[in-house]
Length: 114
Length: 116
View (cartoon, each protein chain N blue to C red):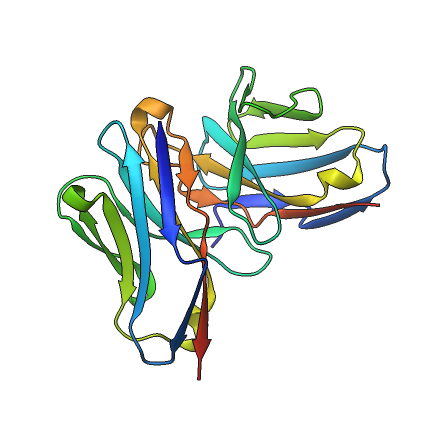
């Protein structure tokens, strides 16, 4: 079984400040990990993913995430928030043994203050 | 550009009627498509996995007779909400995978269903 916990359903940051979104996972097998962004009334867009190899993963729009196996975490960061980063962010885990199904965290809504 | 097209983006229907939502992969053949439901301010809940040429695999608690899924070709899967009721109102999102492993990377833009 696999599960994802996102700490904080809402995060408020000032424009230009660091964005940090926390994600912890549980998986019985080595996981694949993902971060997606969702804008209002739209589908999900992949920000980045970790499968194997380098544990620091860079994605689109200046985001990056680090896979830490010892902490079962995959936190998402961006050094400097932009107004356009205001959206809902979802962390997700997939174990190939689970038939490539994604399990999503509860989501974190990011508000960017000018 | 979008690689998964979902249609319609919004639909309003009367209680008791059926609604069909289409999900198309545009530039690739999708052997597997996934259907999700998202409640307001909530995360995505996987409803079913749609496999081309075979029956869909439904998640526990999802009524297969209510949510009919058809994946007749490698580029099209449909979700039909039968005898819709107001509690079926939700945001439905499909996604498609073009390769084994590494996720359903491409999501449609979702369909907002409102049942009156």
